[in-house]
Image (tube, rainbow, N blue to C red; front, side, top):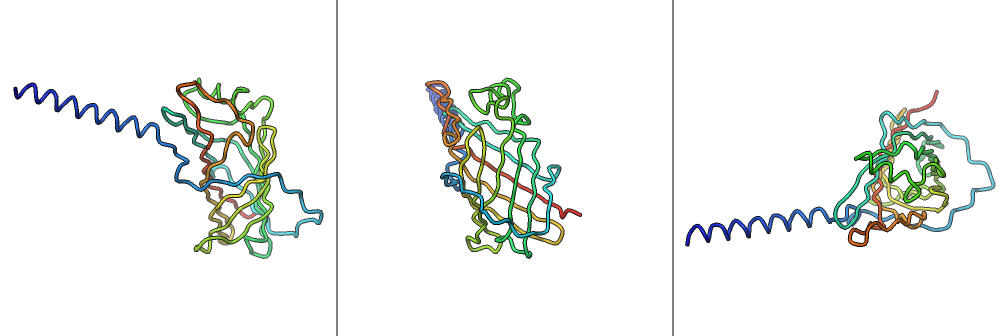
Length: 218
């Protein structure tokens, strides 16, 4: 009887492990993250913005990453080519302005077959929409930390412009400005509507993570 009991015990252990692994694969990476709010784009102010000290984002020390998920697992990637500036007015984050320009054709992920599909009209449609931009319209102190801010700005992506608002950590330290954030957006707000397979549906929320480092210009 002992060998039979051992076999049963092993089978139960294997099934439990397989079940645990399947649950891990199905977890939503955006579930416990802040969710960006989305609304109609904010009209640009008619008066010119106050002149500030310009900081240029350095892609070599920055990153702009995304994580999407479906019923059976996740896919992560990034945009390798992007640029932008942070204009700091009077040394104040709240008076400052952030702009980012993204080359969507620089999308990276793996395997190569996935990258090809993501660049197709099913998803990012990079041939038709090779550029995405973000321009802040408001930076407001939020949270307990001195570096915590609520960032609001117009995101133009996949032929759609929306005002999004999300939490970020922003610090000004001498000749460098650092901005870090992790939040989710609803891909359908930007007409990324590909559903995936019937038994492997793609989730609506996509996790966006960025770490931007900008150096004083001049």
